[in-house]
Length: 103
Image (tube, rainbow, N blue to C red):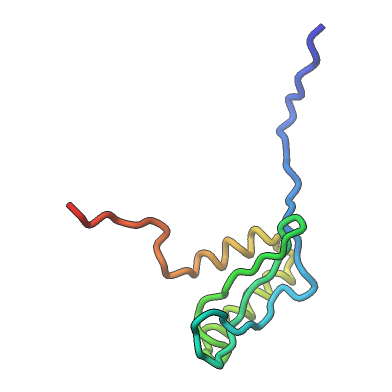
């Protein structure tokens, strides 16, 4: 006998969760010899902690401060982590696709 097919749309529960402090400060690692701090958005993807840089400059830059406040307000309004991530990714200045210029 064939099993009944569920016709309801399947909704996958979001595995992304907020951390205790979704907006925090960090110093860049690597070869950078800077004393500047930057804002980042932190969230959990399953068990893994993820961080996403909030573009706009260091913590003394008014654009970065305004964007960090905007992200915090968005979180306080009840946005999901994926919605916050989409907001921040919209501010990225790097294009996601590379153009081949060898023609």
